[in-house]
View 1 (cartoon, rainbow, N blue to C red):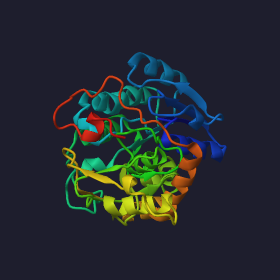
View 2 (view 1 turned 90 degrees about the horizontal axis):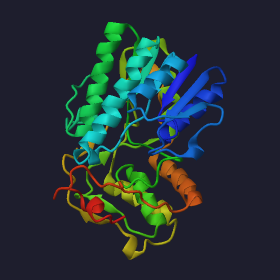
View 3 (view 1 turned 180 degrees about the vertical axis):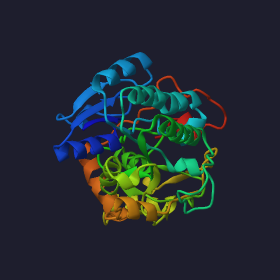
View 4 (view 1 turned 45 degrees about the vertical axis):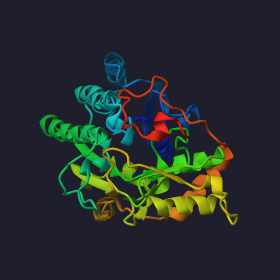
Length: 342
């Protein structure tokens, strides 16, 4: 099979490319614009091209050349909390970039699309979220993911290609972008400590989330590209156990400092809630278990330990704020971004 992975130099995309290459059965094509990915993440056995999916003409030419049979779409502006302040970027890098990719794929005979969506499509409904719940996003990012899902369903029906929609839940682990100050809470906490700084918690820290170690995500999105039973399905991927952000903070601090006490100046500080942040977001995983054989094999403490060990080898990373600032600089911008506190 000729397989195309977008976002292939990023965190989840690079792990997926490694797994596909490891099968030693397919031609694996990989693209990324390198806005959030790393050269070191690129698998040398994949056929990699630097490509900005917002460039309609170049994307069309590339896909006409590659003619992929399976598309795994992981490229995204995955900054849910920031999307209220960068709505144009969120729209262009999510929905528009996906349309610029999907349409020529359909034109060139795509057989199956695996779309990486988000738990954000559930919005502020009562968790645990199950796949039969309506889409009801609270933020711009969730709106773009909702549009991507619905467009996939419509186009799949009209143009007769198979598709699977995957909704991952807070995936973390080695190769994640530690320098992003806007997303990846575990990565932000760890990198702050590596930089000898405290981290910040929004609100009271009682918001609940589930966290998925990368090794409990990659095998299942890979399967979604091939299993007949997965066709036309929406599938949550994530553990059923949830944690508050305060509990997560305690885990990170305890493992980072091992048996030493946490220095007072490195203890977390609290800031006001972020606009439109959903308080409780975690999912059911019965469907993933049934269709994909999902199992949680790495619990939070073990996953955080592995990630910290990797991050300490990487060393402290400088946080990369947007060079041109946010599209909407208002009084509601979180203080961590406005004052660049981390």
